[in-house]
Length: 151
Picture (tube, rainbow, N blue to C red):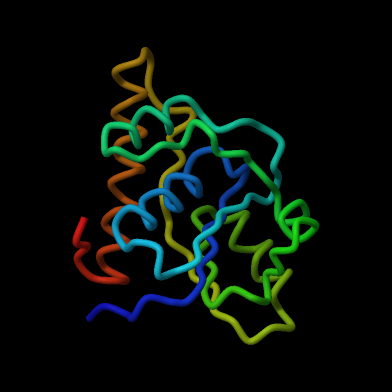
């Protein structure tokens, strides 16, 4: 049984360079703009990953302009974590950090165990396969949570 779409959702991972930007882009593509969607990382210290850009481009999702940001940077820009209805952590580290930051707020933090494709594969084709696997895991979790998408 799928859940209704939240009014706002934050996807988070370690660096906001692979999994959480992919989840943000997929959520927007599949479920439209009815939900306010953002992504962040525990750290915002590296640029968006080129393989993440490539596997999302295969589905018509543009990530090249994504600017990685941390929880701290996000809050400095005015996005308070307490204002999100749902936070979805895509890595163990981000789950711990999100739970710690939000411990005083009544909001839901979920953990979706999405593989980290960054260290997998030798050569471009093998790496793309790993990134597609992570992308497809996110798609499956979105469908499980929110039901089939129309786009």
